[in-house]
Structure formats: structure tokens, C-alpha cells
Length: 57
Image 1: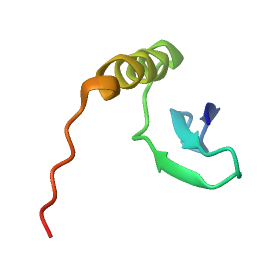
Image 2 (image 1 turned 180 degrees about the vertical axis):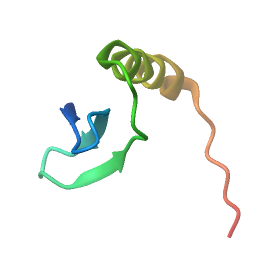
Image 3 (image 1 turned 60 degrees about the vertical axis):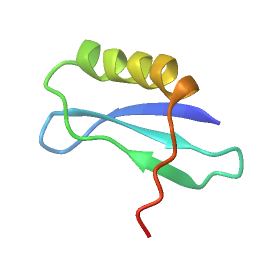
């Protein structure tokens, strides 16, 4: 799995989480600065380790 960062047509930076098979698992909102997108990735990496699963089905 990896994160990809790109700049969209509006000039905002976005990222997506891509599985090892190439499927996109999630994509982000737009960020004005690349550093903000990288910061969000860092928060996901650190916070997701202890994240709970909430089943609202």
C-alpha cells in the first residue's frame, strides 16, 4: 500500500491511498499547500494504528 500526492486541475494538492493491487482505497479533499497534504498523510499514518472500527449497519 502507498500514498500518492498530485495536483488537481484547480491547483490543489490531493492524495489517495492505493492498495498493492492498484485499487484506490480512499482519496482526500484538496489542500492549498503540499505540506498540508503531507501533514494529513502523517496524521493518518500515526492515528490509524489505534483506530476503532464502528459498524453502523
